[in-house]
Length: 128
Image (cartoon, rainbow, N blue to C red):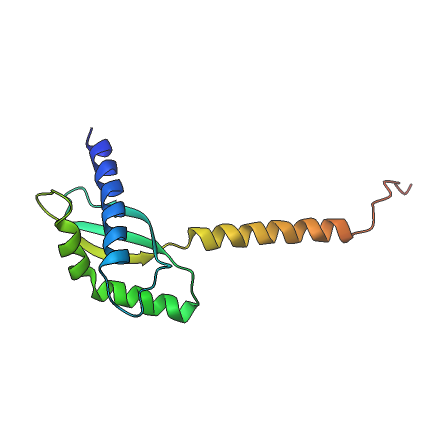
């Protein structure tokens, strides 16, 4: 029962935090390419890890992540106005690298296939 409640809270927080970032954060480093991919809230609801995905260079990603972390209190206060919880968790922003890892794996698999196709066919004869 608690697991379902936590999943619902995580889903709700994901939507609300994304909305606050898109509409209310006025930091020049935070652009519209920020997506909240998931939220993991602690069992006591006092802490939440907010995973974000970005389309940016590595340097820009670091700046955006730092800007979001700096604005975490502002984001929490504005998100708390939209959600009815006894405690609104303190937010910690993390970079979600799952998409990049998936793309890297796909590229490696494609490279293996290209290398297989470039090899000469095996003859299959055995030497006696």
